[in-house]
Amino acid sequence: MSDRTIPVAANGASWTRRGRRLPRCAVAALCGMAAVACGGGAAPGPTPSLPSASSGMTFSELAAGRFDSAATGSQFLRIVQFVQAPNQHVASKKHQAGIIYVATGEQRLTYTLSGTSVDIHAGTALFLQDVDHSHATLPPQMSKWYFIALWPDTPQSQTLVPPATQVFQTEDLPLNALLPGSYTETLRRVTLQPGGRSPAHRFGGLEVVFVLDGTLRVEVSGQAPVQLPLGQATYVAPQTLTQEVATGSQKVDYLAYFVTQQGKPFETDATSAPPG
Image 1 (cartoon, rainbow, N blue to C red):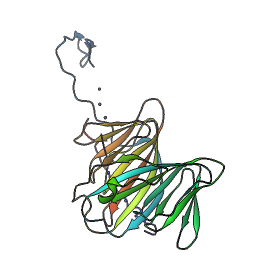
Image 2 (cartoon, rainbow, N blue to C red):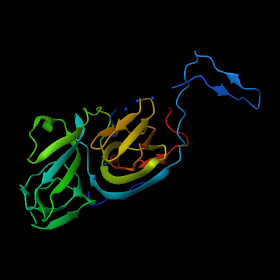
Image 3 (tube, rainbow, N blue to C red):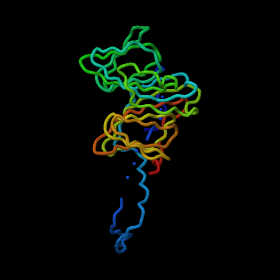
Image 4 (cartoon, rainbow, N blue to C red):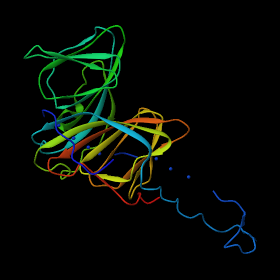
């Protein structure tokens, strides 16, 4: 990842959440001197920091869009999952702008006012403005899809529209997290090969990381590492030194969603990794 600003679509986005590690008596050789048997009392040293450069990582930017101003008062970030049968229809509803990501199957989004529609295929995403619309799953497959958005505090207690299930929600964000101004929402899909890692970096806005496959460790400066299995998420505050690492023997796929204020750098690579 490099330091640059993401282009904006017609109208759009970022944050993190919470994860955990042996010595034995051995023979150590020092500078070619004679070996010395170690005794029992030494405490293990700190975990070495990872290299700051990326390794085994690829990503694609799936969608982006802009909204003109953040809401005043408390806000939170949420991921809602929908599982729809073929031809199942979700009635028209207007809500916060956000990003739709289709994991499986195919979705047809219809805009109520114009009557136009757009098909969203598996593995792709679309920025949705706060307009009346409806969803339908195209046959023959079931569809699993997600809606990721920033919400004002008031709807937290409201019932989700069936067949929705909340899979992640942050606590209320600090009141100074999103200052007045225009913001861009951006969604990436990231793949890390086994043992791979992102570069150490800072994002200019809030970031949410959601694991689609595998197990991801999120290293965040000043915090304990967060271990995320499939279906788990976390958020990271703006300008926080962070790095993502694939753990276990399989590759990791995850979504990275961002809320970035216009005029701020989207991402800056760091020369050192978060302290281990």
